[in-house]
Amino acid sequence: MRNIRLVIEYDGTNFFGWQYQPHKRTVQGEIEEALKKITAEDVKIIGAGRTDQGVHALGQVANFHTNSFLKAQHIKRGVNSLTGGEIYVREVDEVDGAFNSRYSTKSKLYRYHITRKPSPFKVRYHWYVKYRLDVSAMEKVIPHIVGERDFKNFAVSDGESNTVCTISNVNLTQNGSEIILNIEGNRFLRKMVRGIVGFMIDVGRGRFSYQATEGVLVGKIKNVFFAPPQGLFLVEIKY
Image 1 (tube, rainbow, N blue to C red):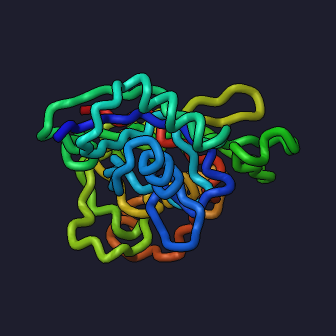
Image 2: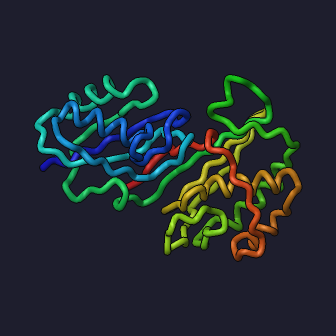
């Protein structure tokens, strides 16, 4: 049986997230339906990460096993012809049978886009923040979240018993009215990136000081605001 790897881009605006849900439109469901049509098999794909409703991807990775002899380029062409413009399979190749897009992952890179300038052309892919922000104060949060930490209080409980994650790099850049946050780590809990971004915005607007980061981590501060989904992109999966 062959093991096929896909690298996928998608606009998550009109999907109920990545993971298959009966009677709801999801990215996984759309791709599996397309693969069923071109391989004549009931295909189950494994995604590297389960993005939530409204979250986008530039480099989601998935794999599936098949008995089909279709060439990689034919699979790519077939899926892209059936999924429409909101999903695009960028790469298809055959990989070692032991490869698992989820469990073989070494790190994931997420990017969050913020704008302080309202625009109808940015509303799908940015969080419009109307507050005046102290970006230097936001940057002071970074040393407190880089490293191995228990991030359960920056996330939403998903029944995960292990809530310790290692953030290897956080980078904040500002260009005019736009702020971009890149966050890379070995694993992420549900809504964890959005929790970190929401907290950093609260620091930037003066609701919290950057020293409050430790208070969130240990559970003394519980009212963390989660950034909305549309500004979040899964950029790259590293193996």
